[in-house]
Length: 538
Ligand SMILES: Cc1cc2nc3c(=O)[nH]c(=O)nc-3n(C[C@H](O)[C@H](O)[C@H](O)COP(=O)(O)OP(=O)(O)OC[C@H]3O[C@@H](n4cnc5c(N)ncnc54)[C@H](O)[C@@H]3O)c2cc1C
Image (cartoon, rainbow, N blue to C red):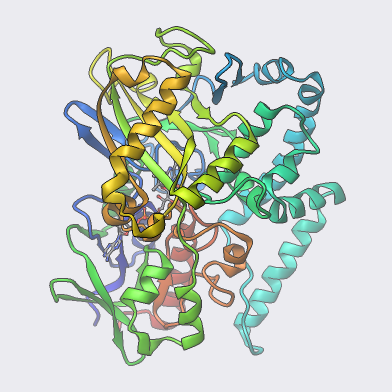
């Protein structure tokens, strides 16, 4: 008898989701997490005395409603709230765009009446593709298999049903879907809109966590990826988890534990245990062995295959692909403690107003984002960086002392590896200064209001959270690494090339973001296999 049916490497939100479903199915599950806390990139921590924040992932939308319901996350304490305004884009010359329920079109019309008139049609088109993605998120993509067994027939049926679903879309919506998978964000948005600010607002989603220019083919997909979420039933809306993102993963951990899952923290896994040519458990850094009938890996596939699975167990061609798995989001993350709310030149005032609760995007055009990318490639970071600032304490008074605030600065386009061998350790604070000074240009006095800060470079994201190359998605979300090619053609059904090993993290379909979907889908594959072939444990 194996002591466990499944051992899960890593207790990020996807590992927790996977474990909770496995526990629900009656399987005996052990999770092993390297850090002292569960949650991976979705955690809340006190980053400065008296100030707590979601220190990495900071805003919620993509978390799947089925998972919220199945894991009864609300019963386990999760409460999601909407922002009072979705986005606010100020410009240095005092203009601004405010995207908020019932007000967005008027704000767009301040710059272009034609853009405002096209906005509804644009939404209908994007919604059609987002609806499809939403449906596909909780399904394994059709997998490339060989031979004529039942597996192959199953995959053919899956491909046919996908084809049938696509057939139900109008030709124009199908063309738009194709555009979204292949075009650059700029090429996708240009025929719709003329205003720089509206294109910057929509195009920002295309470069979040995506180290690329908005003029790079394929970036439109990342825009779509950020559009398949919802908050409390409102589609394409972003919101806040009360208590921070850690509230999501703490609720998931409670759900998993409630279903009998054991969680061990402070316990890095060193390698996957190979037994009789299959995964038979894991070896911990301290030498302990945990045996199980199956192993689910919540870690980046590059980390899994280049550091945890013995090379001898892998086909060299597959290993070569995994070594070449593209990682590196080029993101820099700062948490700041603020003595007061910022007052923007574009919308002055320090009293709490709707725009303070929005995702505040400092990047007024697609050209600005393009320059930021070119700068980062040449210099290591952009002279005029792209920043989204969210001030969650405007919606949640559990995060900061009364009257004070916390803000998340999510900064795009710094080089994952600095040029000329420079080290992030030597440049982190300098770049953090630049980011804070950039906000200060839009909101004079901001810099003086910062009373504490924590800066996380791509190097820190790797060191602290185990994110290979600082990649927030566990691998670039480009066409070559998406859908049936995530993490590789032939292994998109959550089953690894090594029997008994499964992918349950963001490196599997549908990819990154706090969705829970890879964990959900991997659990389904594991349960099916264990029921078919391995049950009871032997
Ligand atoms: C700075 C930043 C901002 C982001 N902002 C958002 C956002 O606002 N909204 C959103 O939806 N998404 C956001 N994301 C993306 C999202 O957070 C991630 O894609 C998602 O959390 C990944 O979840 P996961 O469970 O797949 O992996 P992870 O959260 O990476 O979990 C993997 C787990 O494996 C553990 N691990 C690693 N190595 C070992 C080992 N050897 N042994 C044992 N355990 C190990 C890690 O410690 C970690 O707990 C952001 C990410 C970052 C980094």
